Image 1 (cartoon, rainbow, N blue to C red):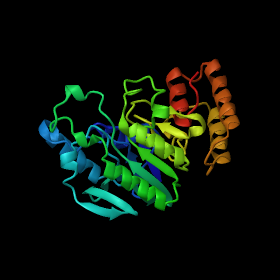
Image 2: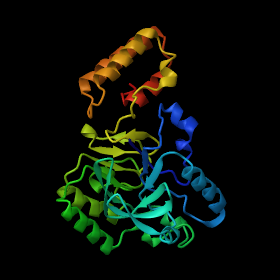
Image 3: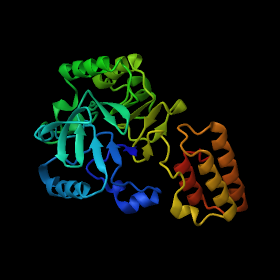
Length: 304
């Protein structure tokens, strides 16, 4: 299975076993985790030893870690890693199970196609030092844009999923963020691609927000970890919380999962029925606010 999360900025602790268990996740040897950029573990400088320990730890995990580059990367160091072909596209091999998905490439992973393009404009560039904490390669070159368009043209301008660090401006400019209307050339370029491209979902990070667009066509991620449907991964319920729930709600959740097993898009009416059922137990006082929030996070239900 493929899981996706947002910027980690040199700290992949959300992928530690205890953190994954709290999310109801068990990511194994046949699974992939895709990070949206600002990977930050290839940085050098005074944090080099700490980052090397994290890279070593990631390399010892059963899953494969994939990432697109963000704007906060040491691009000089990243370019020093060997380039190889992997799943139909070019990658930088960081470790045997850690790969940088290079710009403009299309990969076929677990039977689905992914178009990947990293990079973004740093809004904090003025506070950074070139070659130490900021690199101009954060903005893709004209050649990289052309390469991306050529690959998409070969694919008939249709892929299953799009993975980028920043977002097309049509979405980004609606964010309550410094990044809105920041004149990022990457976002403008993505606008032109989005107009032509056929895709199921577009996943991006950079904005440091967890948000799910209309019909889950655009998935904004920061700390959340989701599967390709934009849902909390199967099994949907968080098992460690479920054991503490009232018996009637446990039974309802079990039936809910059974009804929707293998469903790519859980019907909105199903979600409403589930939220109404949870509300019954909230009103009775048998579910705490903390448990309610965990359930809403797990099932992507509105909290209020």
